[in-house]
Length: 263
Image (cartoon, rainbow, N blue to C red; front, side, top):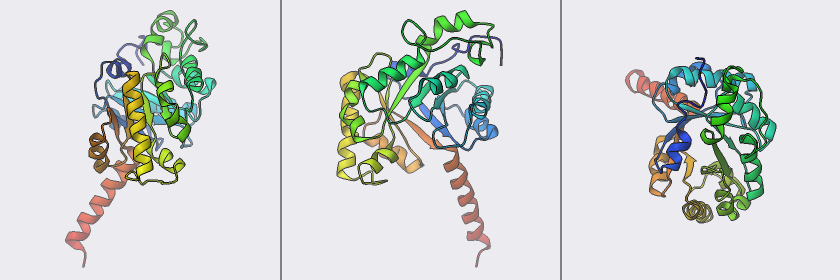
């Protein structure tokens, strides 16, 4: 890592605030090589998932390094839960943002923001870390991080939907991010994104974001979903996952082979 301030070049928060539509990708395989490949494809950001994976802080750090090495893509770490220690350790790796699952109230969003901000705006602890050049640029990073680091609370439950506008209005929240799988599961219609109850909940989150002036994003797990979410009015997308890319590519190759050599 070059001896600079990790906030140099972080653009995700600015893009969200400017009303742009940044495109992201999702990595959860734990492979630095896969993260590096995705990071080199000019996505605006990559989310490293530590909630539903066996990734440790150390292995997540390797994925952040891989994405950083590949180009100018920002890295967001999804922490396992809305926990100040988890947030602090993720950001100390040099991530440009933090995503937390199942935020259900303004108070929970305030806690998330506080964990991601240095005093006096928050209570993030200060120490030498990769984010500040291992202590070489602690003061410069301290002065810039609060303005640079993005905070992405996930809306994944009926309670989160109910309080979505209050969550979006918390100072320091940059976006609402809908977790479609968990939200549909919690509504009793897992994966049924055309279900009326899911559509109503989804539209309520979109309306909450619009009322509060913050963008709303979600995850497309396959190319077909990109158009679906676009048509429903989403502001930006994570457009795919490393697992999905591998599965679809491998299946396509096998099916192409069988079409030529099969009986």
